[in-house]
Amino acid sequence: MRKEVYGYLAVVIAAATAYFFFDEVMGLLKNAGRAVCSAGCYCAANRQ
Image 1: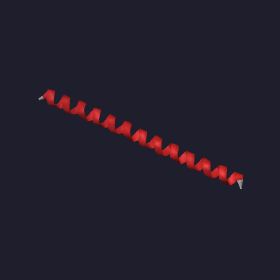
Image 2 (image 1 turned 135 degrees about the horizontal axis):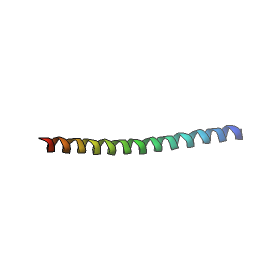
Image 3 (image 1 turned 30 degrees about the vertical axis):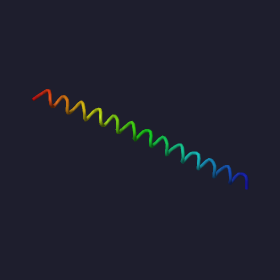
Image 4 (image 1 turned 90 degrees about the horizontal axis):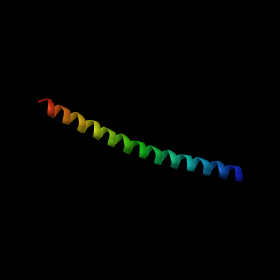
């Protein structure tokens, strides 16, 4: 019984960690995307 409980806890902790990590990575990607877009728009505006 205990092994099952520990296995279940390990799965829950791993899932929570993956979820938060994924959320963090998505936030970083969004910020990076905004930065690249801003830089691209800025360069395009300066070229004209």
